[in-house]
Image 1 (spheres, each protein chain N blue to C red):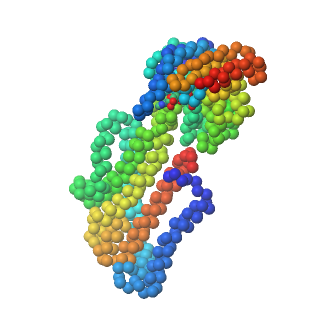
Image 2: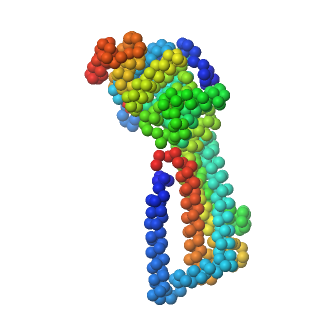
Image 3: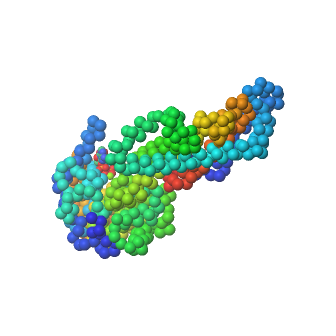
Length: 266
Length: 262
Ligand SMILES: Nc1ncnc2c1ncn2[C@@H]1O[C@H](COP(=O)(O)OP(=O)(O)OP(=O)(O)O)[C@@H](O)[C@H]1O
Ligand SMILES: [Mg+2]
């Protein structure tokens, strides 16, 4: 969050440096394979993974799984983050609401995300509604927390500006509190996306059993099936996809955040 | 409160008269106590230009915050036009020592915010905002964000914001401190002109004794620990004043001598 405006040159430099480690690992992998060190079965060869990826794209199963996961994650994230924003604003702006809800929210927040699975599946079954609810729940808390904290921690000097200009409640909220809280709200947004993405994989992997009984789809189910059939090539591929899409989403939100708070001193 | 002000008409005459009566304030920070103000009394007539000078920490900003209604004294009372000051009002405009522009609003929006609670057509407000931006010499920087401004430019934008609602009482906390000498003397004359035009009362904190004598009807010298008024100097010479007038030089000498002993 702190570092903003990199110049194009230094940014490409940063990207290049970030690629050093993955490239080195890839090289090592190819080398080991060429030397014949990967014959055991637990570690597969690069060409095998490449072939599986090719097949996966040819029959559409891989992009299909990735898309299903992405859609699920974005849906759950949107619902959870929006609810978190609304709740966070209410808690951050109203002392009464805070007294009413804060203790409950703080306790619920202590429950690990996947500990909700038994309860939610009892209520909602093991279908889509349950998965989305779980993802939304994961996204909700960081967003609510970030928003609430941002609203409560508006620096006193800014509040005083609102007071001496006799701004009414509405103008104080829109011109002072929400803009001042925005950096914290955006941190909540980034975190909630992160949790939603992890939660999506967990929901797909843990709920329903993937391809085996045809109950699930997405990268989580893809991975569950791959493990079941001991397909290391598919496991690697699935993990790679999860990482890359997750990274892409993260960068997207980060770029969006930076643009929104460009008024911050670099 | 806010609707008593209007966008274009000069504020009513005889407004902005201040009575400060036996005001005291003690701050308690952890196990330290700071006696910031002790029994400060001062009556300021409507339309008067008062400067407050004194060493750092003698309670100048604290007193100004009381006048603005941002804080309340422990003892004593402050009235403006007969009303006890118990909360901030657009009738008492303050320009803070730190400029306090909102970093997410550009210059124009920052100034316009001070007119948000006033009645008036948007077009009139826009015109008023522009005329103030022109006055403080920030024409061309309407869309600049505070972090793109220099310290002096931020200070000028803050002055524009403070002046925009035409408050009958103008409270200025070292408003010209960050400015180069040319801009500074230009804005000093503008302040006098505004005071003349709008019949406003001005209370200005400054570290610059010359500035205080040049502008004020009275210069209040404060001393610290506890913060109190050491002396008040009437400046009766006619304006425009010149820094090398014998009167001017003599008064400056008295004030700097007094400050040196505190
Ligand atoms: N909110 C506060 N909490 C604790 N102490 C304070 C507070 N505000 C002011 N003080 C103390 O009161 C004294 C007077 O402060 P004030 O800001 O009024 O000084 P000042 O005359 O404006 O100084 P300067 O010329 O440096 O701006 C100082 O000793 C300061 O430490
Ligand atoms: Mg001060």
